[in-house]
Image (cartoon, rainbow, N blue to C red; front, side, top):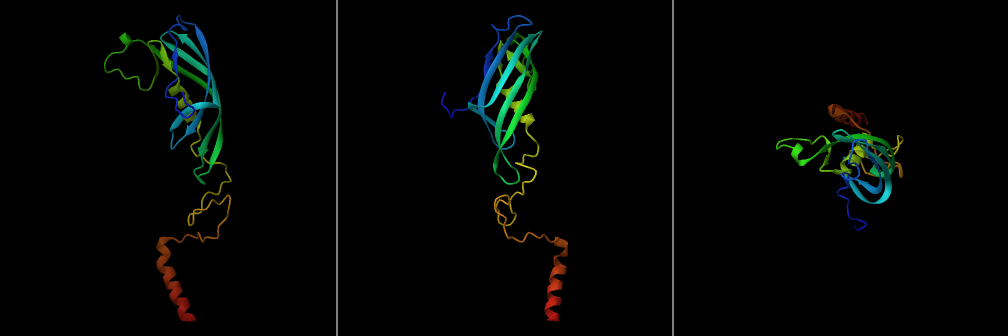
Length: 186
């Protein structure tokens, strides 16, 4: 796999390792995660985010427990600068253990993680946990001043001299009247 080639799945073959109820296996890994717009995540080879997950077989399912930690680069919604967001996630999920004969046409397991014929894709579990850990308001700091609405400069770096006084549109006719009265008085 090339350094810049995205990881599209992290498939775990659990059929042999978790043959009986009560068996468990520890899975460790890492990746460099690139956050895009909204909640789009791309997993790349690297080590910015590391995970250690124990997969334990129970009747009809597996239980995934573990930790996920590291940093993800996000973009500030105010100033559009990149910043490092720390992750420290405690993971606990269940995945249904299914086989081809368990699934009937029309069954929808879209909201469930699943072990199909002994194989589990860990990537959706990790992706969902990371996305749920992101703040709703992605800002680099509470003190971020954002961008100037007139010229677009980053106010954290370079304060500008733009007049950003807002006038209520309903008062614009009065502004014109004020100018005419001032001209008449001079």
